[in-house]
Length: 212
Image 1 (cartoon, rainbow, N blue to C red):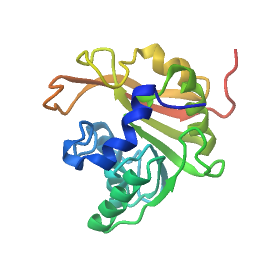
Image 2 (tube, one colour):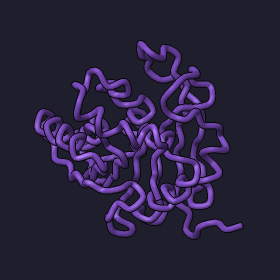
Image 3 (cartoon, helix red, strand yellow):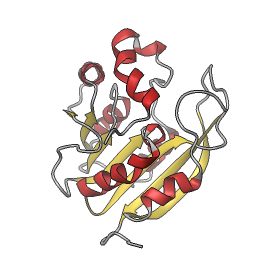
Image 4 (tube, rainbow, N blue to C red):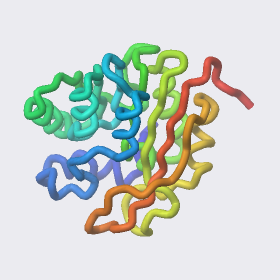
């Protein structure tokens, strides 16, 4: 099964190969404020193993590693992972980088304390959403955390990622996870999209997946 929407699948790796990072629209060189809050309050803390799904050029992975976490970055783009390696060298941190499909990461079962998704889910085609969430749950230990940030349906209209309703997220997530927190928040503005309304989801892995 192909994870990403056609637009994303067609352009993802090519943009990393053809453009400087500063010209890629989603690259802001900053981590989301909600992720920073999770580190500040100790929800994510030193010593934990965190899988960064769709890590791209590695900004979030480097941030988490810099704050003492054992980070595994997963991405299907070798070009993006090479950019991530350069960033890790610059930050002086170690991150395990894995070139793999987000629907089949090759990571062991129950490997992680947390899985982090920054702007990946909103590029996934609807029919692949539950497979993606199931893979995130598989690599988590019992009670592990799934942290997700993506475009909400209040986001400025236009091209690019899907604008997600609450049902678009929760219908796929809640069979495998309990909701710790789920809300919209305003994120850093960009030139193309000055009013950024995103979802923040913080979920805890269920002991047994819910059926029916």
